[in-house]
Image 1 (cartoon, rainbow, N blue to C red):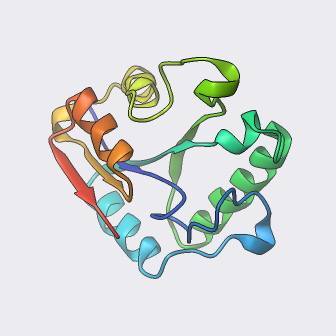
Image 2 (cartoon, rainbow, N blue to C red; image 1 turned 135 degrees about the vertical axis):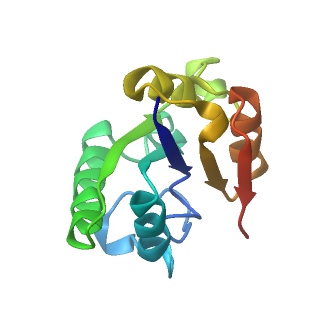
Length: 148
């Protein structure tokens, strides 16, 4: 079985500026590349899980999200880091109804577990909101770190 470092995107990978969906607005958090490199060198897969309610709200499209995500993954590659996958929840309950993927629900984590044969007890999750941490708890991840 494998282990992974799960990262929330907005607020952990990049500065949270509310509905970031353009490359020009994406600013990496200081130290994120070093952190990911350390975990990768320790045998962790790097996986990003992100709520993207801006899609459901019509602020940007799935295509906009994909363009930004591809650019972000390439920036990590330039620093020697492989992002195994980026999972996103495009839903917002008031608009699309309930779903299993929107954090604090653990759907994205469970999908990653299936896709990458993960032992969630050996995984780490870093988030900036209580919903990130709760998603990790709900999935059974043992190491949960909240950043400000």
